[in-house]
Length: 213
Ligand SMILES: Cc1cc2nc3c(=O)[nH]c(=O)nc-3n(C[C@H](O)[C@H](O)[C@H](O)COP(=O)(O)OP(=O)(O)OC[C@H]3O[C@@H](n4cnc5c(N)ncnc54)[C@H](O)[C@@H]3O)c2cc1C
Image 1: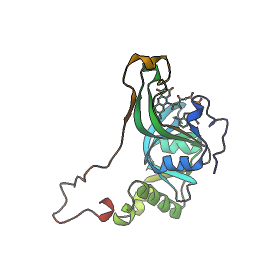
Image 2: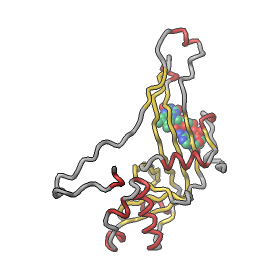
Image 3: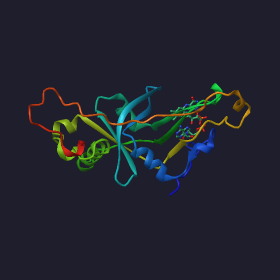
Image 4: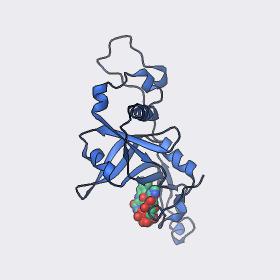
């Protein structure tokens, strides 16, 4: 399915890196769990790193925090911009000007909806937990009524979004700088989970659950 462009999401610069494929959007969102939430608080911009989860129907991104968090409390009243970025490599060209980054990036705009329905709130928090660590919701203790009351959950529709993806080598391989005799190419970057680091306060014999294996 295609992403419907709006005046806000229409790519202007580096248009060839833009994607209008909704599957690309969902793939970028599925590949991460930390976003940057851009919100205007008291007339000033604030960009907050925060965890998110994509709903199973992929219609909504959930994010949460303390009810005392200014970025979350203010967010429902105004348009926010939520950005997810994955860096896949450094593009090292012959000229400094042509250097770049291989990346997958999504930006979502909208007015977040505060989730107050208790059932949706639990489902949204489940979605957040499962997005980052599948299997963890059923393993860990669920939030208490008091913890739920202290948590603000917001839902942002994925309808108004833009995606940009850059892949491939530098762009100056067939230009005048190709004759400089300099090495050029991509320095790939990967993010991988490392070995588990058990809490030193764990009593002996408590093994990690299989979903962390
Ligand atoms: C890790 C990383 C590093 C980057 N470094 C640079 C850099 O050093 N210099 C540079 O010029 N550009 C860089 N970019 C690209 C940058 O994000 C912008 O796409 C680019 O600068 C064009 O900006 P603009 O405001 O002119 O975009 P416009 O084309 O005017 O933006 C129009 C609309 O396109 C969409 N859009 C723009 N950029 C993105 C994006 N990255 N992802 C999803 N949607 C987008 C937004 O909805 C935006 O409102 C980088 C991107 C990434 C992910």
